[in-house]
Length: 408
Image (cartoon, rainbow, N blue to C red):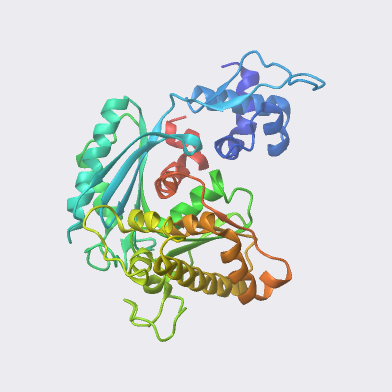
């Protein structure tokens, strides 16, 4: 490395993390855009891009071509290295788990679902998760830099404990991050020479919101509200000022415990008529007079039931009931939080695609700000967004300081 390049890199080292995050989120597709967004000289931006390429994280095209109709010198395109390192991501749910290898840019390199009964001891399923992830890594031959876990529970920080795993049988306060870290180490996911160190865990909806904000339907929103229902229960997450808001100890925005039907059924939280028990897939099936089937997830059964709305009056009434209760909950959140965008996941995303105007009208009718201007309500767009979000947590140390993690 020449003295000139060394001095440029010294000036730009503090820009390595911000530069990588810009490329990772698709906001710096060329070196010219990177220069502008970082507010540095072209030489410094060139040195930063070259160092990220040396670290095996990005590629810089050596012969840039000018776009049609453009003027001036063509700029080098910056791309994430398709053969670069990955992190292991996993999501545990009531019916089993899914593991994946995820590269920069939220790209899923490989993934595999596993169905199983999730027992009361978290180590049982997390051991299976780590073994499945290690097998994916062996097959891929990739270098792994971290591991992230999404769980259906609020996760307290900084301890990494699952405080209310209501829909799996784990005890409250289970140290899931610590257990996951031990399982990952035992399975050999990280090799001593790999530099991988980050083992993290978070609530599945929080992580879905993080992924959608960086790579999906929530991109560029400043105050983003995410509400989702998957296999059981209802979760929510909030991105404020472009950052995931998790509260003082990781427990913010338990939207499943908003009351939407005061005379409704008892909730696990001690209340009555909460979204969690009035507007999740199980509640939808029961409102339509359907018994949950023995095969397939409740989410899949509910998604299939939506298609019968036009032909079955009971299903149509259940759809209207679900829409009314979700809309009332969203309106209350709009009144309190004033988000600039709402994204809906799981069954709610399907409900929005099925009849967006009906749901938007309910929210507008029940919210102060909805009537005055409206809040965009969109379905989530990423496949397996909680997995991608778990990967985002695991990638964060690299995004913060690539040289520190990769041994620069």
